[in-house]
Length: 100
Image (cartoon, rainbow, N blue to C red; front, side):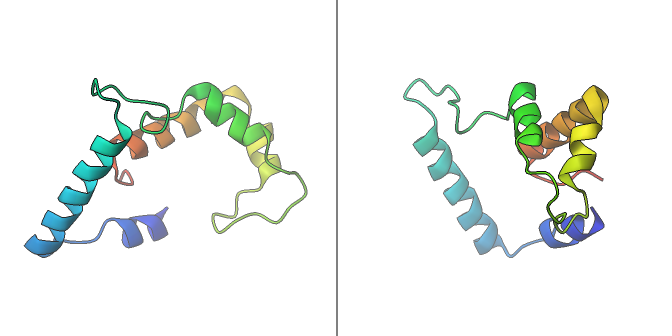
């Protein structure tokens, strides 16, 4: 997780870059929100069921990714692991930042 903190949580950005990022974020938000301003399936955080499904459809007996976590480990983690993964993913999605 330290790798992601270093890569994603950069220090203060120049004002112009911050302004451009904010503008891009607003444009995307307008594009993906419905006319009524409600979230749709592309903008809302993943549900617990979606996280559970994503974990269970991972192919077994494959090399783990950069995080060194194998699909088998995630699948065998049970309900508690799925709940913890869901809470972490939701926090990252909403805050748009890797938690400390």
